[in-house]
Image (cartoon, rainbow, N blue to C red):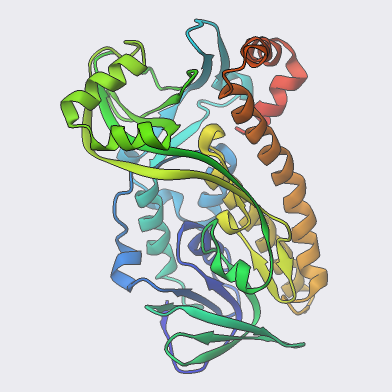
Length: 394
């Protein structure tokens, strides 16, 4: 990875050195093109991200992509937790929708890896790439699109020229807004509380989603008898949860899980995140594209946010590599329109289905309660419907 020189020219400039932005940059290793990654954070912070409580359930597709990038082997085995099954339960019913690793003919459904661990190891790969320049501690002030290139004005007064700008700056993307691209935004008026907890009863490497009538409880299996616990509730109750001392919080979680895990003990801090989903109306414009959460900000209920981000990055990387092989300008609309259509085909059904599940399973209306019990049995018993969900886990 190179150090920034004044007023350089690049083939691709990525705004945002989060996991999506860095993974995208790593996709161009060993190619004869110049990549810039711009971020407002200091290099040390990007290299050593703080623990943020988030655990990422990686599918086999995502793992294969990380292997292609040369990142998966950087992550130690002790940082990877196996997910064998995933179960969805409604209310106090004992009936559950089950997804088993045998149904996708794999040894497991995937692996659970902490978000900060993924970010740290992506950076390890990035810093080894000779064709990538990290421009840190600066912000992108504006983007001026020309016919043959785009000019980015930085907060330090410098400008850089690039054939393509790729924004990976979160679901609340400022670059997306600066380019005049709007997004469908859904604010659920809820918060998600995440933390690591130790529990008395074993999880058996099974992930659970409990749809209660006033809140949602989820657990993702970590090492030994530990799980990542996710509570989604209205802002008043989530605020109360964040203020509780550990002793009361432990009792609250034991009660919310109806004793499912026995005694529970919080480990470390609790983290709160607002529940907002976004879907960008256009993933591209002239010499500009969005990836990751800047393209689609998913609800975490299906745990597919980062998996979708990696799939979108992979699609755009493939389109750009094809353009390079054909000696085509990577910023042309003809290159970007294929990314637009392909990502829409993947993302739209997943986004709409996920929001539909959330609407159905968080409603207290009596018809919804009957419908969701029926839906669990329908998906469990009708093979083609269940296979649609299983395909997301491959």
